[in-house]
Figure: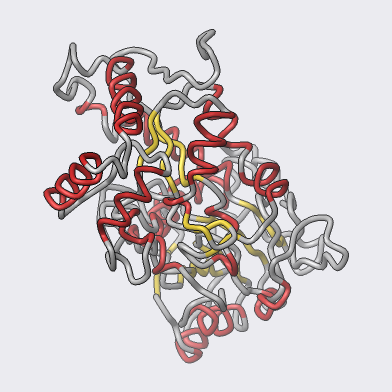
Length: 421
């Protein structure tokens, strides 16, 4: 429950909580072609109705900070948009927390970034940004801002507003009474209860897109007892790939970057002890002919990314994923699991699959995937966005005149748990 406080007032529920930040203000998810830091071209009505609701809700619930987006709205950099930062966020919505820039956000007001740093400081601060994220050249920033204030180019009233807002949040969070970090919960990180909750989230977020080449012959749930099964694909035994970007490293990484369970390990621990699990990252046709598998599980997808590294105008399934699917699914009954942060082009391969699961980025708890594959729990997840047939259809949303997706928004097949659990 949230307290009965005035709309826009920062709120932190006790010293064992942290302040929250709503970002990236505003329209960051609507840039042209989805390109990071690009231009969002919509009218004001669309901006307010489509991109602002999350900020309305956050402010009402007492969010303490709002971070500005690198992106632009109709050609105006958000870090320089005083009409939206001061006019809408601070004045109309009465947000009383503080506004923070993104990493070197004011530098990017100019093109190329940093071309006129003094101008960037002037425009960013006057637009209503209260705290500037300056990772490197802080002495230059302090000098430029001081000079701008002394010349009244940045009015002292703007500085007073920023300081008042920052102090308000610091008082609310009790920073002056307890200035040092509270480490009493440090030993709780990664504890069993947290991993069980993450595992449950994996189970519930998986979306079953296809189950059997006909509705009368479902493949899932898979039998735990089988003589020999194949697990294949680049993402079957790679914890870093399961986690995606913003994990340990900015753009994530490959391999055992943290503690957790890969999908392969989860499968091995779930099937009957007598079932032989064979793993081959990218088997060829001769390998398939030389072995007799009861069924195969192919796990493929994207490699980790964050921000600009994730920009992709093709959205194709990275190699060798397509070849692995074709080789394995052409030889034996197969389930394909796609590990990705978004829908990818998979229509050319769906016909060869017996079953298809969108696993998104299951993170460290791969056991949650096996929980559902083998029937300990049923599939319940639904698509949170439309899955397109080809990128030529994009953008595509429910209600479009020619809405023709591969799988529509909200789609997701269900299964019942088996009685053996």
